Image 1 (cartoon, rainbow, N blue to C red):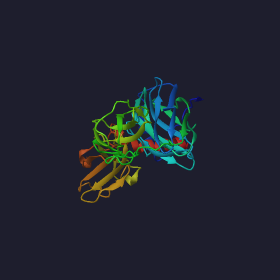
Image 2: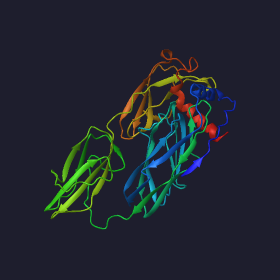
Image 3: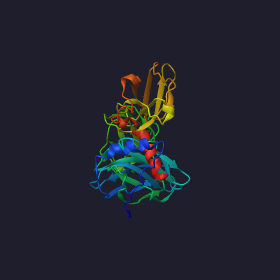
Image 4: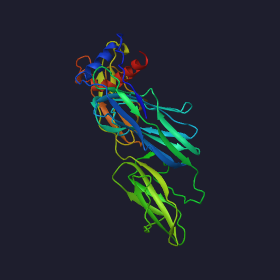
Length: 381
């Protein structure tokens, strides 16, 4: 286990953007804390996985009694052995991510930056990494020394941070013939689907019986009691998340190896959110901009789209400067999660909203912009 000592961040230098720095620190100054050791690790810390199969590893944080509000997480992995299928932020303790997680397959790095304006204390999940095993070997995944957790103390104090590396043993695929297990409504194991039902299909062998179970655990093994129906089954669950369908074939009282298929299900739209209108004289030539940030508890937000009046939807990022500064045509913002569920926020006319110049009470609505600047300043002191 490695350990890093706490250091203090440099204060924001005065500049044309100093207002943003003042606002973000002003929002946090009410809470005062001291630098203690937060703990960050991957779960599971070790696992055996066959070539071609996937493993979802959670990035977990325990603040050890302290209150934090910003984190920059960087991990190093072995791209020769592992492939990153997705980095999921749904259900994260961080409510805001200024940009999507990034993966550098050449260098073998994963980066996440996020924050929670009101602060967080306790234990929780920052994000989930979906690995796919590529080659036989022992794949080590570790946290870079660039990883940082900042306290919710209004000063950007860096928490003392402890973290541990993880190892995943990749083994060859089973040599014995496997049952071909497919799903009509969840055809790809590594994609999220909105389908409320989970349907599984396989070819039934004459004289064989089958035992199966739908589980949250990748390691569960079905019992040896035959289940019905077989070959074409439809399972229903009101829950969303990551599921595993486990199947065993038994012939003459002897049951073979468990076959597992991963299912990613998200039938729930993102949480309701607001799109706020604001102005800052030193930004965007003083033009009005729209700031928005939605959360999704399961698959995470994939992207945002905006529609001005009767125009077509187009992909955008927050903050967004509309062409029609009068807002007379009406503007809608659509948040879409990775399964395709959507939530729409209607932008109220500026006259119906308080602008960010009028009050500091709407700081949360522009916190994405603030986090971008805040994290940029840390890397460019």
